[in-house]
Image (tube, rainbow, N blue to C red; front, side, top):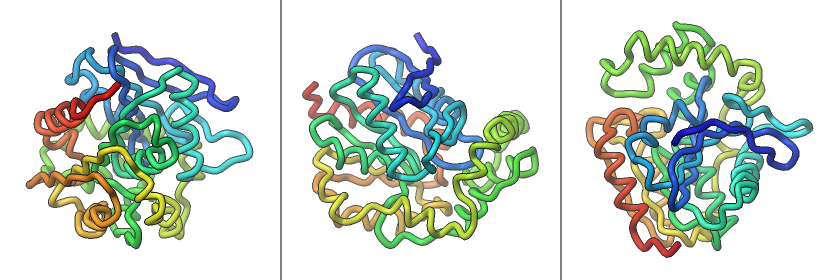
Amino acid sequence: MTAFRTVTVDGSPVHVLESGTGPAVLMLHGSGPGTTGSGAWATTAQALGTSWHLVAPDQAGFGGTPIPAGTRGGLRLWTEQAAGLMDALGIDYYAVVGHSMGGAVAMALAAARPQQVTHVVAVSTMGAPGAPLSAELDALWAAPAGPLGARDMLCRLVLDQALVTDSAVDARAAAMRAGAAAYASLFPPPRKRWVDDLTLSAQTLTAVRAPVLLVHGAEDRVTPLETATQPLLEHLADVRLHVLDQCGHVPAIEHPHEFRQLLSCFLRRDRDH
């Protein structure tokens, strides 16, 4: 059973896709315009089946979740909202899967809630100390709403350009238009400051007690392997890295079967709760 619902977190609505029953897995999307929880994770959730309780929110400023009044988007808000969402749902123990921006949020959440977060999967992640703003990420954050902007963005995200179909472009363009008002406030130029906002300190990274799986595409130009993921290996206590060849920034779309296999095997590892 897959359902959309709105959950109130600290007085503000959060739009959530939920599916399945069993051990809980919080799934956090990345940061491009038009990104939503369901857009990022619906096919993965469907393929994983009903043996996990998957929770995929639109983070503040994306999809159906507004930025709470008096705040601005950023790592602190997204981390606190993710923790508050799981509290509101009454879920005590959970794994966290995050893509790109969501990977940084996932690791920050694991550091903040070490008693609750059981596993972390950070995919094409941001958050590494010293990571630069890549030209590709700068262009993604600046992509204008509409078909041309959507096509350009999708072309940058994936290595195999055959995945940039007309239907994918149309769907992304519609999502970009729907979310344009909230998204406009999130990453205005100069954009290096937003990379810095998502950067995790060495102290935060060493506070992550849960086992971490890093998944990265060898040809990722948005968050390149050398600057985005490899530095994390020095700081995380219990970590392993899986690199997918012939893969850009979105392994869940580019190598869906292998990605889901990695995910399900890792989430079953040392499952205490």
